[in-house]
Length: 222
Ligand code: CA
Image (cartoon, rainbow, N blue to C red):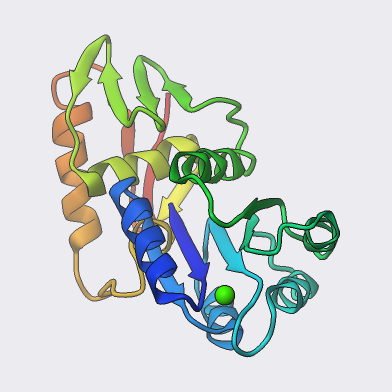
């Protein structure tokens, strides 16, 4: 899952990026409202973390503008402005959730998971597909009761697959949601990672979950 952070304080942006990357998310950072809106227009994000006090356009305006342009990605507002009026204003211009600084990293990550789930039919962090179980909070995967160890990227890819189970996912969609803006579209890295993933979650099992859709992409199916 891919996250855009619009935050001008470099220390906070860096700490956030590190914490989110540790949780296997792909993260892009913009230091101004203008740069953030540009990225939001070009890339397909699963979540936007938006600071309010930015050097150019404030977060409320960014939010309003994005929503006007049919940007449906969940927005988590992050700010030092902790008055009720500011929270109301943020939610009313289209933010989905609100967290005041200083925030607890654990709470932020739980809100990130919750906001991303709302885009799917998942209600908890435990996702089941056939006999495969994935816990996006504990970051564990098992199949038929057997623990499976995945690398960060494999986990990120599987998370995207299970969140969109039974749907055809093109290579472009996978690269947009699992990689960040440094992805090289010429590479065959997606096919390689699907191969690694299959080795771990499908190879030793009778029923295959990851299916190749010839000329299109992949689909994870029960
Ligand atoms: Ca700021």
